[in-house]
Length: 119
Image 1 (cartoon, helix red, strand yellow):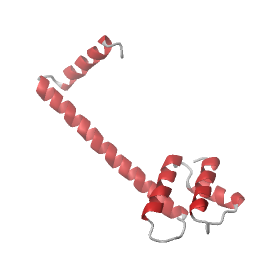
Image 2: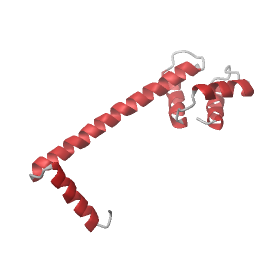
Image 3: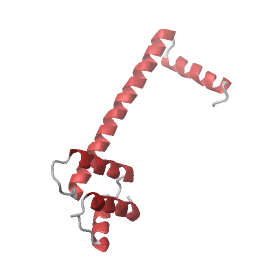
Image 4: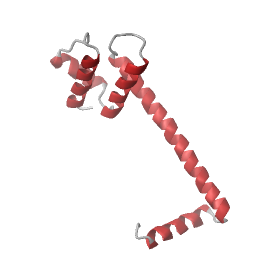
């Protein structure tokens, strides 16, 4: 995340939790260091998730929020793996149904794309 994105995240936390005190020249760079390499959307999603599941009235610590970001990424990877498996199964069924090998099916799909002007 950029400094600007980290600033947005920190001020959003302060808006949700008024007891969260910010010293901009200290708080924002500290959080930016922890969240470097994290997508802003993932951090905001983690903050929203924290607000929905938290059992205490306190703002999230950077480690709590970072942990939720890791869980979000893990779940996204699991979901993607599931989608990839579903795609593979659909392709296998297409091969079985058509009597084509995977390579033949790929070539057939490529020729359809060319005819449709999409390749």
